[in-house]
Image (cartoon, rainbow, N blue to C red; front, top):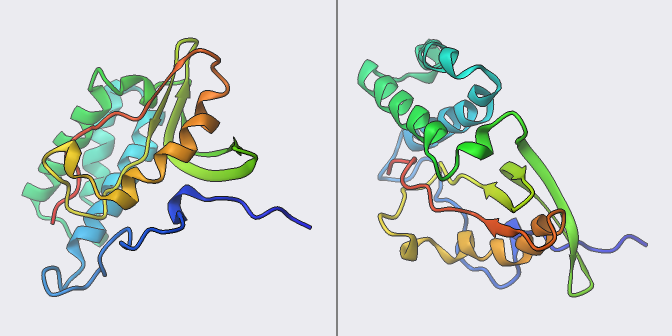
Length: 180
């Protein structure tokens, strides 16, 4: 018999859904969700390119007609994504030794915990985890992050920290990337 795993994305007791419906009254065309998917794709794939090629690759990707982005929106997204890729607090998560869409698994208090994070890098002194929430309007303060987002990290941390005994586990606040 397979052991049921605890998945941090679906923690028991959470009552808030991870994201609002894509076509609610405030966003009838679902632009926020399309923007989120575009940002997520850039953050996943641009790190595979040399830093000198990223701006041009981002511009080409954002200009695709299927994204339905204005020139202003393209420039804004490109600037935000490139700034995040270069941010000193998280630059290692986008380096050559990092993983995109990394599966994680481990045990916490005897229970199997499984999940997936957007970026993961393990160094001798820390484990750096990024999990973007590009499908919801961002809070301006880390203290205002929704409980359903924060609630997934405590069970995940020991699973990520295990490869680096004595190391630090960090999931930094990276600021706004989604738009309401």
